[in-house]
Length: 302
Image 1 (cartoon, rainbow, N blue to C red):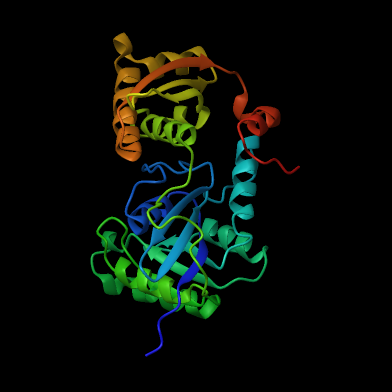
Image 2: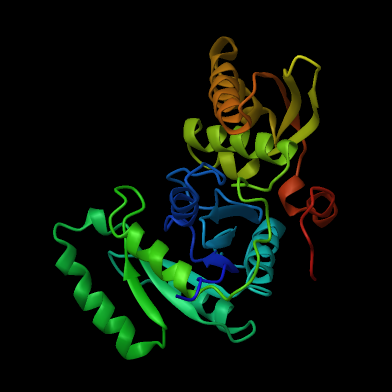
């Protein structure tokens, strides 16, 4: 009997905002490695999650959603990050909402097709929001008649429905090769990045209106002492005094809540106790300033 050779490959998730790419990534990896909320545009950076078994390792690249490029510079940067993540992978998972195909899905598909030719699977997420799973069949027929996806897989990241099937298909689709990361690794982002993402997640979850889209998080330091306590100092940027007042909340309660929930998530991720200090700082026009975006680690292509 021939021993099965190990498989290793890279997969990117692409799609319009808020179709559940980060939730799918977190469920497949089995650990929270990308922030989620009900608001679009939550993910701003490429995040690697690693799923390993005894016979295969799949590295997932999570992307921002594909945005309308009009408007602020940050939208153009998010699109460039998403499109750059398509290169150098073995498979593209395009994620769409099982409740219907939209113009923004078309834009995301064009972004994929603008890169190098790669196998593309369509993952129809949120099937749990349909009254019956069979209600997705007309959408599958429509997509099949208009596009050339290698596979179409309906799932629910929230309930876990059909995720095992997606996992099995991904396993068999990866090329033969040794693992690229240690087998115990699940996420490969550094601690400062993870801290910033979890703080930003809580801003999206707890603050209404458009304020989250005008905020950024800059982690100034992340230091572990000999006893294993991780001390994190972070600035939350906003664009005016009104936003600052809302972020702080009455008697500072909202900022305390953001910090408390973010600290809990960071501790879960790192497996260590965390001391988190955060301040609100006004940085007018930061989201439309290419130099600031570049300094924050975003690759700018004019």
